[in-house]
Amino acid sequence: MAGHSAAPGRSVTSRALGILDAFGSDSPRLSLSDIAERSGTPLTTAHRLLGELTEWGALARRPDGRYEIGRKLWDLGLLAPVQLGLRQVAAPFLQDLHTTIRDTVHLAVRDGLSALYVERISGRESVPVLSQVGSRLPLHATGVGKVLLASAPDDVVEQVLGSLHPVTRHTVVDPERLTRELGEIRRRRYARTCEEMSPGAASIAVPVQVERPTGALAVAALGIVVPPHRRDLARLVPALEMAARGIGRELARSLEFH
Image (cartoon, rainbow, N blue to C red):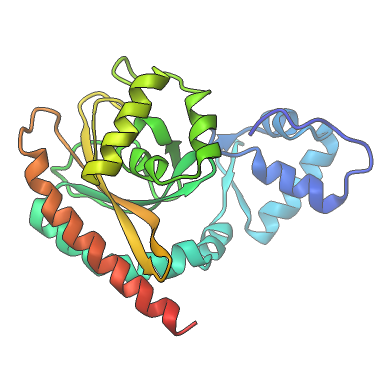
């Protein structure tokens, strides 16, 4: 998100949005100088806008002087359809799934070339994971991301294949290999990863689909994260598929009334 140029004539709104856009999953807390540089905003202007954004609640200033996203933006974000509708519909199914398997369960949608995590449930004994609600992780390195990529438009797949990068030494970065893997995911209807996003974690994920007259539309991906030494990942697929079907049915019903 960094690197916006300081274009003359930018409106106040544009500069404020540029400041907010400086934050990301890789940079959740930033200093004044960091924000000014990443947003392409003069230091004095950034300081003034940061004060206004903090007063309104869009940002919060930490004791160390750095800034982070404020609670008001979080509250507003929860009202977005992808958050509000999907999270409300999926919540009971995710909870039931977590109760059954006791491992981390998460729900994600595609946001450009990233998997945007909209919900996560984990317990004290769950494998530590990088995903948090609101975080964005690479499509090619996560179970839910690969499911979403397998159903993405061709131009999205081409962009991802052309910009593969390693996250760990196990991340698939060979375009031909990933293309074959995506074909396999479409055939078997689930994805698997092993330490491709973070060491010590394996994942399995399935699509959440809504049936339409023209065919099924994959609107999200449902996944779980387990220790990599587990050998029964494939046996967890039916439980994931059952929960995904339930979410898809409820989503379809809710759409009928809108």
